[in-house]
Length: 284
Image (cartoon, rainbow, N blue to C red; front, side, top):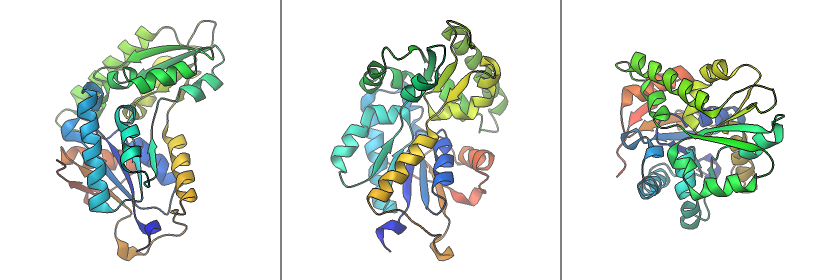
């Protein structure tokens, strides 16, 4: 098998990265993907940097050794902030793509000059985020909110036993955090652009849109990440240009270190994938 035939690895602390996988599928329809959700160790956004770095390196090694991935997408803002610089040093030949809150695109499209940013505590407290925020100072005013508990609540909506309680908690947290950020709208002093700085939050965007109003623009990172992945694969001559033979098996395989029924539920709900695409795995 040529290197171009190998899969692209994608990972997140949980199911949030499936929003990035959706965009990757749309942009790269002929590629194979291996997605790993580290649910047993989630949420990353409320763990220490050291812990997140250790998990990130362990998962990268697993995907490289067990699946011979040709590229790696770190579909987690917290893991990107904590560890992608180290991954680039350890794996200089592996195309690597991380995610970061879309502050620069948001600064370009805001009309009121006020931008809201929702992200995990781990992301907003990172040096990488501080540098990113510093790079756009003067372009807009940013209201940053560390949304403790939100990613976990969204994650738990995929558990049948927790779905109703978790959905109510998601609604409560969204209302609390949006109210704390300030008024939304297109008037003077109002926030007219909202950055979803965690891949999980995309799965709550419909409710978010209702809370902040239809005129507020929501900005996420899936499509820019997909475009960057495509550029890197093209540069490395690793892009697959035609569908692989059926004998190579399923085009998308999903793995979790945690609750398998939760991953199956998320895969069915958001990717329309049947349960046989989902598997349990241990990554030490």
